[in-house]
Length: 273
Image (cartoon, rainbow, N blue to C red; front, top):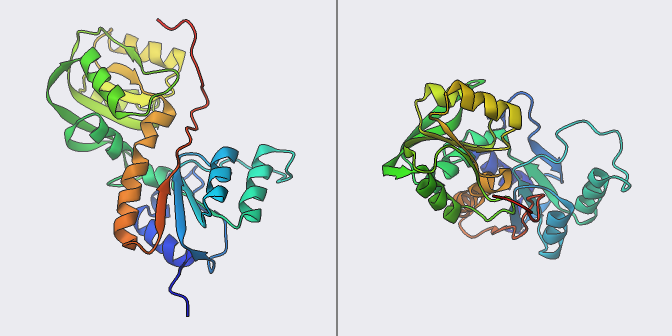
């Protein structure tokens, strides 16, 4: 009898770390492709299930691809290879690769995305920023000592993957920063929570023009200052943490790798100040 773990065995461990019932109601997490009885020897972690990432997984002989972002968050009416979604599903099935998604259930986990981002910021005394649908979302913490806004962001830049757009900041470079809120991924829905937490800076991503202006106006150009670290960078920091947790859980019975492909859609910037 084979000693290989089955997909069913592996998912039981993943779902203990990132319970599906802690995902937000609008989310689509869980198993997308795969047979629960198929053996799993190699597990690959990535932020997005893009065609390039799936190709990387196939070249590595991966049995299970675990991504943060869903492949099928919104309804589709065809999986023909004439569409990118269809081509992705086909590549997974032809390659005999199971795809599993841990999204907002990984965001809110004790060692999840926002916790990893808080640690990348150098924060301690970390606690939840807010609660949504009964789950802890975002984090708040403090730096060991006060830094200027510029110095704080320069340190964060060294801890995150380098993105084409860099890190956008709204606030005076010399402003003092000690107490910080973070939310991995898109975060302009939690401006009020960041203000209520009394933080000096709020680190997140995907900040849109009008909501960002309104947030700065509400703060009368004072704190919280806004730090847009980029969606890919702000969430990628979770992947090594997840690998560590899974390595410990499987104790060498599953080979676990992290994707080397950046799925940041931006490739270069022109004319940045």
